[in-house]
Length: 195
Image: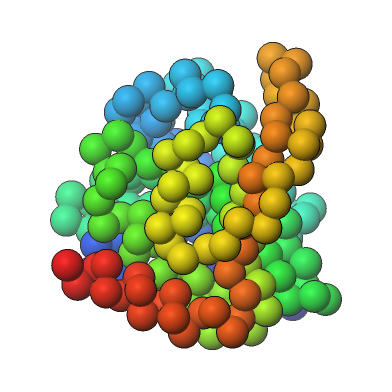
């Protein structure tokens, strides 16, 4: 049995579903809201690359134990983004939450907060994780701020960590939440959702 199995997680604002090919049109529409693929430091699929993006995400699931998800807004039923568990390290009970992006209309709403609450709750309380990581480009200032607002602590910066498709080098900022911090982070996220 895999450490991370397909699961649907549901809150008041969002429903997180395992990614499947039938989500392609919704993923394409969500990415188009804000033309998110134009942000050079993200991995959001361009309209003509949606199928390839899904292929890669599902390959990561099969080969590496990752679990890609779409994020569906409950009120409209529309897909408003994507996220995944990956860099899964079952023996050490660690994983990363990343590859997260949201349609422009869903940014700075309850969607991200609730999505992270659902994913973190499952990671710490169902999977028994001892740590959950978040990583982002050093140039993705909005993402860095959003991760810090969750209550994650910055662990450091991996310099020249990745070669991007255009050949530039990416410095990666690493954050984490460890199990002893989870109760306070959980309370903080619930407080933010109550506001």
